Length: 376
Image (tube, rainbow, N blue to C red; front, side, top):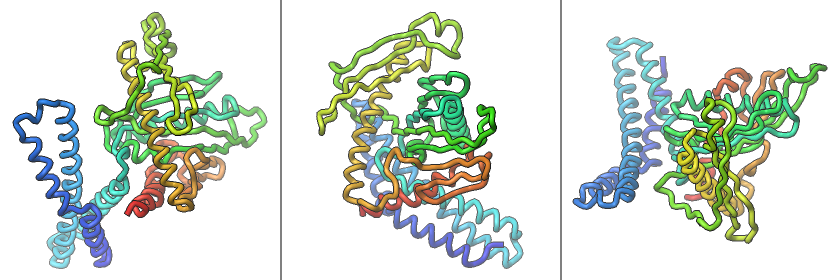
């Protein structure tokens, strides 16, 4: 049975959410933004109308989320009183408490995702490190881990490019993660180098080996985000896709290769961005997706420049920079540890099955909260 202190904690956290989310102001904003959708010429500009509807729905989700936790906190308080009068059971009160606590924690976590790009879908690329088959197998294990996490959270994963390993595993994979909220906001915590330590099944002497794989996550832009692509710097190649997909994939040049001659606006450095897409048998669809992935990369570069500038101002607040080694998976010792937050677990099998919410939450609690404080 929960205590009065636990009930008070729930009520205090709901009251804090009312302040943090600025609910009173959001209610006013919601009414004002909704009024714009009732204008007679609202749908004359479909793109603008769609952006406005997205804005309205975004505010509404925060209001509904808060209304839910407020209602659950009120019902928990009522159940707590009813238990004293023997109207409800101890188990019913505890069940109400667990549900309210979960929804409060979910809303607190989303409140930490305040960056413009956090609600977006995500592009994830996994590259195997040096070490041949062992590191390629590790890259494939990470791919499976993230696919299991996505499946558990209702996200759809589409593999846009896959390079298989020489004997086993994969050299690299690029996939889009769509169909849910805050895919990028949650998965940005996975950016960096992931280290595996295990007795390798590919080593005849049964030695303990260390392997590395890098994970890059960027936001997947949509039509509401303006990203300029210079047509003069774009060139295309087509090629026959290989791998799974049926005989037709191998006979038709459905695979596309986009080359973009990128020039850094600050330094003037030039670089060719190369994107391959073999997602479907339809070349025009693959071209459209490749262009979307290019826009996502360009947006990601601009975003990281902004973050780097912010990091200079907030020097010393973060323990780690983008691309650094972030996590170790030590199979023999039954330990997975995040080096940025210190969060660790002995449930190695669970982690490899996609149970990484603890790592994501620890990262957001530490770093997203610090970013929010820096802005205030």
